[in-house]
Amino acid sequence: MSREPRERAWERVHEEIGRLPHEIRDLPVATAVSAREMRAQLAGYDFREPLPLDRVAGDLVRLLRERSVQVTHPRYFGLFNPSVREAGVVADTLVALFNPQLAAWSHAPAVNEIERLTLARLAGLLGFDAGTTAAHFTSGGAEANLTAVLVALSERIPEVAEEGLVGLGARPTFYVSREAHHSFAKVARMAGLGTTAVREVAVGPELAMDPTALDRAITEDAGAGRRPFLVVGTAGTTSSGAIDPLAAIEAVARHHGAWFHVDAAWGGAAVLSPRLRPALAGIESADSVTWDAHKWLSVPMGAGMFFCRHPDAPERAFGISTTYMPAGSRGARDPYATTVQWSRRAIGLKVFASLAELGVDGYRSLIEHQAAMGDRLRAMLIEAGWRVVNETPLPLVCFTHPELEAGRRSRVGAVVAEVVRRGRAWISKVVLTGGRPVARACITSYRTEEDDLQVLVDELEAVRAALPEPPRP
Ligand SMILES: Cc1ncc(COP(=O)(O)O)c(C=O)c1O
Image 1 (cartoon, rainbow, N blue to C red):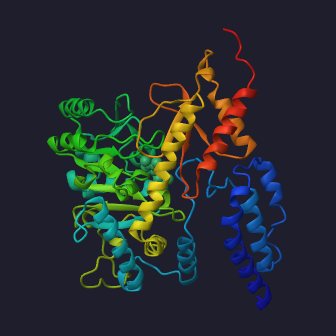
Image 2 (tube, rainbow, N blue to C red):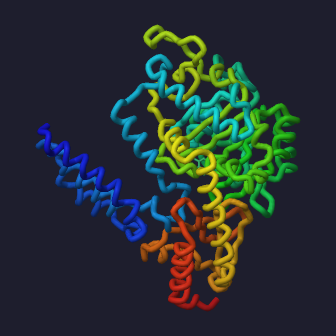
Image 3 (cartoon, protein in one colour):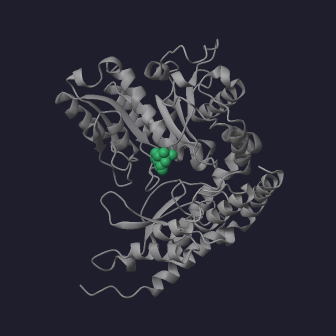
């Protein structure tokens, strides 16, 4: 490759890094393109002739700008995908450049210890013992939840490691709320447990797990010969930000001898805020926790985290030894033998860099700003005549409008679709347990300000006013 295109490619990337954060607010949030149109646009790439890198970089910048939902937009009120901090972009670039291999500690001592240091600090914020907690980075929350189920299985039914599930006789069963994330259904399939091993426990009016229903379900299952081994509490459900009563759930889990895991993939960051921390009371006593840095800690995907209070438990679940891997290092565990992954990217470098740049107090301000924007959005919607239907201290608002509920069927979905089509704000539609569809808006960007909330409310009002009358029943 000649020197010039290479240099120009980096200039293009550097220019975009400078421009995007300033221009993002004026870009459309949404993109509307069919698969056929998108494929046609890429048809020129037949990989027959080599292309100069600056042209490829230019094309990629344009495609990413024009053909993506802009999740770093301050008016992307979406699915926990954050605006990223530049420190994370710098760190991820360095990771791509050096490509450190973290599988064996001795191959990447610096990054392995950088990750350990970062995770220990975050473990301390959860209320775990930073000195003894076993923790590692994952590709995301789904992998962290998979890890939790496999570790819980290994701790509570250790014979599965050698004999598998076939010889067990009694069916291993675990418990999540009806509003829990559906990664657990996938995990049940991946682990060979099958989806009927997942019991969805009823929720109360605030969409949080009912501990009495949990106790009843476990008692019935144990009586019927099943083996309840794990209870999962969610701290910040995906649909509505509900927080299960963690302490009460833990008491039930302990009573039945089950492992207690908390899925705090999004909500975990609330431990940074003195105002929000009490809502997560009980997380500090969990056996394990899922917490995603690529959600509310504003780092690029993927960066999940798994924390386990029992330092040797992950190694019991994943331990393995080979002669072809480098020998272990005294005082350090090798990630390939304590986690789901083998080859391991330096996922945690972007979390380290963001934490180092902002400091814990800086992060606290970002979290509290977003929580305040959530409160403000709730108030603005109510003022404009909308009805908020969920209860959470976290910045996630589910809402509808009495006029949209007037007919036999809710018309909120049509409003959500039109708001998205207009491109000034991105929200989604969700159906909560026992309810009709509602609109969902989550503050996912530290860049979101009150003017952005006003744009959303104005868009909702404009679209609602333009909606045709519902058909008469
Ligand atoms: C509560 C919860 N758990 C787990 C996940 C899965 O996380 P990921 O998408 O990072 O795999 C999500 C995703 O939104 C989530 O909201």
